Length: 467
Image (cartoon, rainbow, N blue to C red; front, top):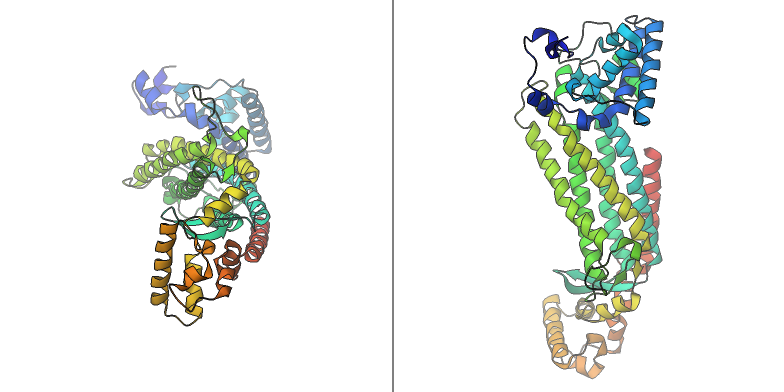
């Protein structure tokens, strides 16, 4: 048999495919990763074909047994992947025919590689989303626990990376948690659109065989069959949506990583990361480098690139399927792997963060972080806010000159800027008084942080129950 006819489509061709073109157009080197999902889809397809009478029960049993054996071969590493057979689908079908004879060729009745690969990718994505969701849940759980433990730990809050107002470390961690909560919702929402079945759309127009797509969808755990055959085989917006989620998530993890890198530095000295999440220097023995957050920060650009690649891949494709779509898998696979690994690293690392409470507290005392509290104090005494702002500005200027924080000044020193200031001012100028005064929902007061942690825990439990 010539190479021209040694393909599922070879009958129409009069000369063999160029060897380079065969390698260039083949996808088996990377889409073999879909083998388990391909076999899963084929078993469901064969079962449906038997139920509608296209296959006999004996043929269906032979196909299912053969596919199960092939799955075992793949898992044992004994399967021989062939580039001339192009892709995962034809490799498995060819092996099935080798094992059970002509009945293996009947498996492809009523479907195309177009709807087959679209189904495989959705099955793969559904499986991976569930793994990623579990890691994201684990990270959020650990973050909430740490935030609750550190509800009283005072640190400086920043704007423009300049000391702004004192907050608690627990409050800061719950800000991270809120970012992840929105990411979690985006992921679960994405899963809903992933869980729609293309199988039965065939090449683009459906099939003349009396298939029952609802049966296949039920067997595969899809919510429903895709409504339109052209759309089912040609769009990859679900993959784009996932990489969009992944990009937003990695953006959030990158922001967290940036803070972790800063906080571990000698200049900040806010936290310590256990040695197992760090590495050393080959030349500087004193170094302890926060490689895990640095690497997560770096991987963010990689995922952004995959999003742009998939958007560009789809932007000019006419309906229906085009060979361009073979290029969806490698960026999608890498985005999946990157997200999963980054989440695992963070879920392991975040609960192990050790805050250096004294360093945090001392940093919060620098930079006049209670200046706004003094302004608020004056306003409560009847001073217009703009006037209060000027009084505090003059107080800060005096503090810079004398190298004194507001809380370190005497009452007489403060009263030179306003005689309205009285002894009770020191209740608001302490760091503890400042954070305790923000005692409302969303505020940094320790009691509010503990209440917020409890609400976050309940919301996460409800989300886990709903999914």
